[in-house]
Image 1 (cartoon, helix red, strand yellow):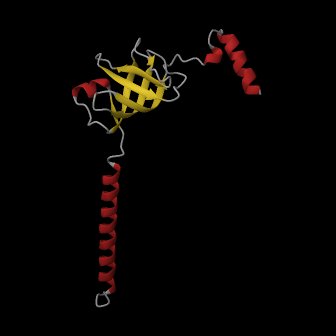
Image 2 (image 1 turned 120 degrees about the vertical axis):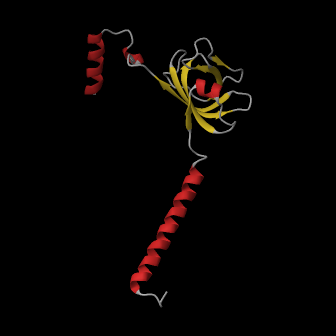
Image 3 (image 1 turned 90 degrees about the vertical axis):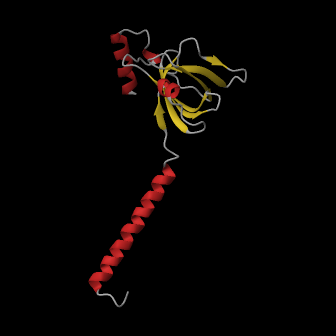
Length: 154
């Protein structure tokens, strides 16, 4: 490169730097594509299920009457339903969020198994806009306000 004029040396250096950055970006994107969690509703899984083993998020409602504890005492099984009535069977082993109840919203991170059961690794329970903490359930608005004031003053 010593035979090139300084102006051309800078041009070659900038060109090489751009090519290296583009290659690094493409490699990063290719490496992360398998790590991305895609969001599915039960209707999406019924219409076009993802390949088994792929990390996805499943969202919907916990079907009333479907929640049960399996014989090992740690694993739960339930169905997640969507607006169109499609249901996906789910299993989860671990501590269940406090807000997780039948009829509530849930987002589960995990993988679809070959048999069609979704194996959840984490559960996120959703609540509606009428959520009330357990400590305030059954109290009047004035009593709840008083409890909140006392806890804020501590």
